[in-house]
Length: 117
Length: 116
View 1 (cartoon, rainbow over the protein chains, first blue to last red):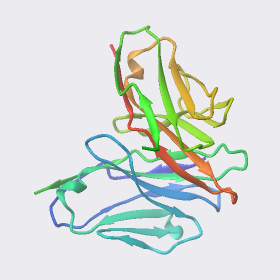
View 2 (cartoon, helix red, strand yellow):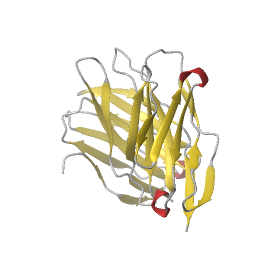
View 3 (cartoon, rainbow over the protein chains, first blue to last red):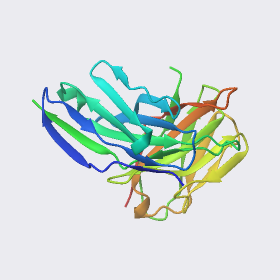
């Protein structure tokens, strides 16, 4: 079975601080995909990134960066110089391909980030 | 705009009433999913479908039924609503390429359901 753990439930920072959101996953499969989604107060789910298990390169997109480490089964997300607009609930998720097509996205419980001005 | 459309966006039901949530996608995606989101629980999979005419149970299927009569639509039914089904419901769709890689996971904007 697959499992995603986001140990932090809520974080509050002051604008311009850097913040890292932790994600630890569990799977016995060697091929899998990891995702991060953002859910702003408006409620929709916004896709941020997808990473496959064979690509351990870190990724940077503007103020966002992701650190994927298979050795520790972690896929952490860092926001540099946080802004008020980053305030949201962030979800880490895992998907394992299945030949039968029965794969699905398994979510962590989410982490609420509040960025104060 | 292309994407996943959920109707209705909000609904209040009385205990015991029934209703159907509609999910429609216009991306020709093969796979569709229904999730529920509850505070502190993340999103949990209710049911999913790997193609027209097929459905399967997810993590929390009890009290719900689904149907996928057309590829573009995935319906979630509550036959006898209970207060425990108060939640935000999200539909999603995805597709798999020729290499078997699952892309997409496009989500609808959600349906906020309250059962009183």
